Image (tube, rainbow, N blue to C red; front, side, top):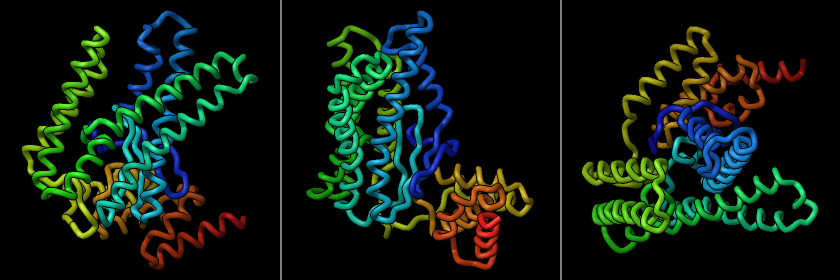
Length: 327
C-alpha cells in the first residue's frame, strides 16, 4: 500500500501532477466520522471531522510539494500521490546522494514552515472569534508539527527519517550493509514506537497498528529481497510488466480514439512512481499531449508538448490547441 499503483488525477500545479487514491478517500471518511477519536454523535462532531480532514490534506500537500518543488528544480519530473497512509512524492532518481538528501529534507522543512505560519495566524485576535477557523488552524498546527516530527526524526523506512538515515549510512559503509541496517532499525523503531505509545496512553489505535504492520512487513520483504533502497540515474533498469501493460493499453486507447481512457491510463502510470525508462516516459508525454488536446485540456497539454518528443503529430496537436485558443 506504500507503493499503490492506482490514483485518480486530481489537479496539477507547475507541471506537478497530484493524484488521489481510493484508500485516501477512505482515510478521510474515517477521520470525518471519528473526529479526534471522539466517535459520531451528530452534526457538530462530523463538522469538526471535516475540518480536521481538510487540515490533514493541506498539511500533507504542503509536505509533499516541499519534496516536489525541489525535485522539479533538479529536473526529476515529480508527481504526488495521496494514499491510505498519507502522501508520496514520486520522482526520477537524483544524480547523487547529496541531491537526494536535499529533496528528502525539503518535505519536513516545508511542513515545519507551515506550522510556524499557522501558529502566527492563530495569534491574530480578529480570527479567534471564528470557532471553525480555530478548529481548522489548530488541527493544521498539530498535524504539521507531529507528523513532520515523526516523519523526519524517526529512522523508519520509507519515511523521510529512514531515507536520511540510509543516506547517512551510505557515506560510511557499503550499500548492502547500509540497506540492512536501515531496514532493521526501521522495524525495531516501528515496534518500539507502537508499544511505547500503547504503554504511555493505554489506548489502542487500529489505524496506527495497521500502519505499523504494513511498515514492518514492507521492510521485512525489502530486507529479504536484497534489492537496493535507492537508485541513481545511471542505474537504468527494464520496465516492469505493469508499466509495459499500461503503456500498451494507453496506446491502443489512443489509436481507437478513446482519448479519455488514454489520458487516464497515462496518469495512472505516472502515479506509480519515477523509474520509467526514457522510451516509456517519452511515450507517456506523447499520449498525454495528444489526448489532453482532444478532450479539451489545452492548458494542461502545453506542459506535455514541451516534454514530448517533437514529432509531426505533436506539432499538429499544438497547432490545434493554438487554434482553439484563437477561436
